[in-house]
Amino acid sequence: MNISLQDLSDRQIQLIADHLHHWTVKPDGTEGYRTAEVTVGGVDCAALSSKTMESKQVPGLYFIGEVVDVTGWLGGYNFQWAWSSGWCAGQYV
Ligand SMILES: Cc1cc2nc3c(=O)[nH]c(=O)nc-3n(C[C@H](O)[C@H](O)[C@H](O)COP(=O)(O)OP(=O)(O)OC[C@H]3O[C@@H](n4cnc5c(N)ncnc54)[C@H](O)[C@@H]3O)c2cc1C
Image (cartoon, rainbow, N blue to C red; front, side, top):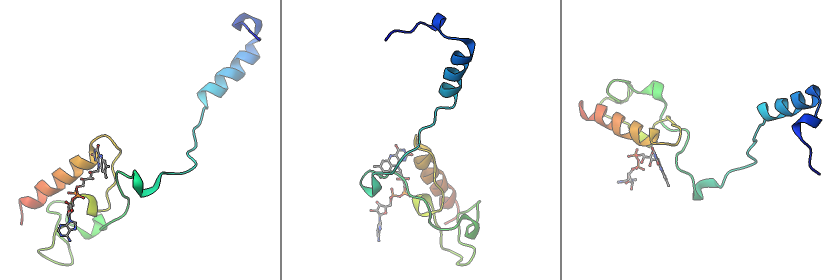
């Protein structure tokens, strides 16, 4: 069945526009660790110096990268975090 836009009323066009603008995609699951690229959780950032990455409780102990509770969007942010936090800690160890 072919329907041309000119056959639709303003209200019908508005309804279609509303549907398009409020389109939602709801994931119903993940593929689990098999394809996981980053983990959530880890060493609490509040327990670390944001300048040196040194533990506040255990002087001389440093945490960087994936082991820290920092989770970036995909697209290089996790590598950036790993390298940057490593560089910071490297200035102080
Ligand atoms: C499949 C996949 C794809 C990804 N793609 C991207 C991406 O495109 N962009 C992005 O930004 N991030 C990506 N990530 C995330 C990114 O790889 C990590 O966030 C980053 O590598 C973390 O660096 P890291 O040095 O903290 O930890 P890791 O890279 O995990 O390094 C930890 C190292 O410690 C070693 N190790 C562990 N236990 C011991 C031990 N007891 N003694 C000695 N050594 C030990 C491990 O063998 C490993 O070499 C991806 C991750 C995965 C799994």
